[in-house]
Structure formats: structure tokens, C-alpha cells
Image (cartoon, rainbow, N blue to C red; front, side, top):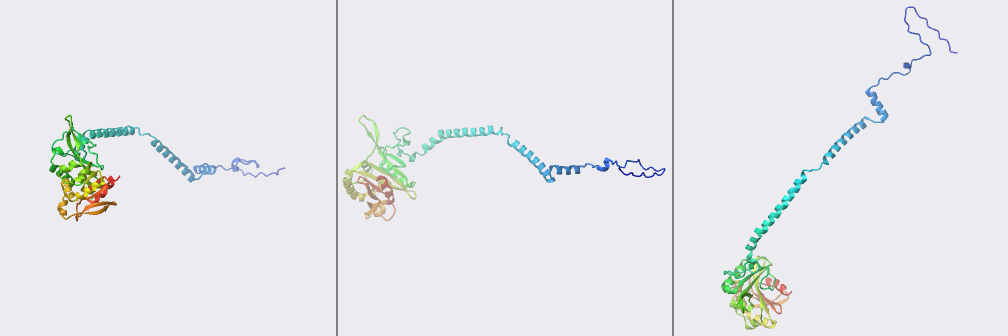
Length: 338
């Protein structure tokens, strides 16, 4: 049984509110009303999603970067359709121009080069009289004379069309003009010979005919031993020097060596005649040949103090090499001893 609470007395004429039951409590008094603001919403978001102001900013920045990346990727994937046809056209144009240039060079430039370089190619006629060979024969790569040493250059002299003085003067010009070191130039001599049917053809003259054409003395013992093949030419040495040489073939070493010993006194004059040297004038009448050794071989050399000389040796029992310097002899002999 609840206790009885006494009712307070009311004064007359004063409003003192509506009397309430003592046990009734208003709902508003038990839970106070909360006013919602943005600050409160943010606080609740932080509490519920466990986020901070920094994480929110980073998420927003991440979204912006993702949008930028997608925009750049879209631009990079655009194919340059307008550039491919242009590049192909440029390549095709350049290719066509190169083909046209090569065709013009082959048609116009190459023939001029061939015609201007006939001075140092095989089978060139240096005589003043026009050659009776067919047109274009001067540019043939195969000469009439198989050289004893492979040459880089050759010159042909037609003996029936020239005097000895003119032929040997032309050889002297070749010698004084110099040559590249290590190169070989071959001089070969032809003469027209009539056959039984009356046709004329050019044939290589033998060694004996060359000596006769040069009016050069040679002992009979050597003449009888001489074979037809021979080689007269120039060898390029250091300093652009062109050193003359003469290669002879003999049938017997004994007769060949004996003939060379007799011929020694006339060898300086022979070189002066064939190549325009002045060995005889520099050496004097008292210059004599002496024994020397070249590449392990016995050789004979003219005793001059300096400059061009005459030196010879046997490269093999049937091959005599006569050169204008010891260094030239050392280069020529190995080629013949192979």
C-alpha cells in the first residue's frame, strides 16, 4: 500500500498549474531531445565507418588520379591513322628515286669512267698509229700475253707500228711517272704475222725478238738458251718509285748462268735502253758485279754507290730475274718460286 501524499493547499486567485498524478513522468523528461547538425553527422560517420579526415581526402584524390589515368589511356590508344600512309609514301618515293639514280649512273657515268681509264688497263695500244683491232678491244680483261707474275696493270706495244726510240721513250715515261707500292705493271710486245691464207694476226714476240728490236747485245751462249716467254715491267716500291725488272726463261741452268756471267758488262746498257735509266753513266766503266745473297740464293749485283742498280739471280733453274734494286728482287723472286 502506497503512502498517501498530502495535497498542497492552493491559495485563492493564483494559478498554480494543473495538478498531476505523483507517479506519472513525462517522456520528454526521461530522454532529452538532440538537435542534428552537420558536425554531428560527420562525427557519426567517423564513428560508424572508422574513417578519418585524412582517409576521406586520400579517397577523393585517388578518384581524381584514376579519372586522369583513364583520360590519358584513352588518348594513347588512339591509332595515328593519318601518319601511316604518309610514311609509306615517303619510303616508296625514296626507293624509286634510288632506282632511277642507279639506272642513270649505269647508263651514263659508268661508260665515261671506262673510257677515261684506258691508260692503265690491259691491252692498251700506246702507239700513235690507230690500232687495227676491233673497237673496244682496248678494254679487254684478258691480254694476249700470259704474264709470268700476275700484274695489276698492262700495256701493249705493237712493234710493227713504232720505232724502238718511241717505244722505249714511252716506257721511260711510265717509269718516271711512279707507281703505287706493291703493284706490278706488265709491258708486252706484239707483232703482226701473216698466215698462209694472207690474213694478218698479232702475236706475242719472243725474248730474242725484243733484244733484236732494242739492238741489245747478248752472248750467243745465252741466246741459244733463251726460251720464248719473258716479262718486262715495273714494280711499285716505297716512295712511289717504279723499279724496272726483266724475267727470262732458259732451257738450261748451266748455259743460262754462263751466259749471264758474259752478259754482265752489257746489262746496265740494256736497262738504260729498255727503261730509260742512267745506270751506266752513274756506275762508270770500272763498276763490276759482285756476289751477294738474296733470300738465301746466290745473286750478282752491280757495285754502284747509290740509286738504281742491276741485280739478278735464278728464282729456279730455268728462270732468271733481273731487277733495278735489291728490294725489288726480294719481292719478285718469291712470286716465281711458287
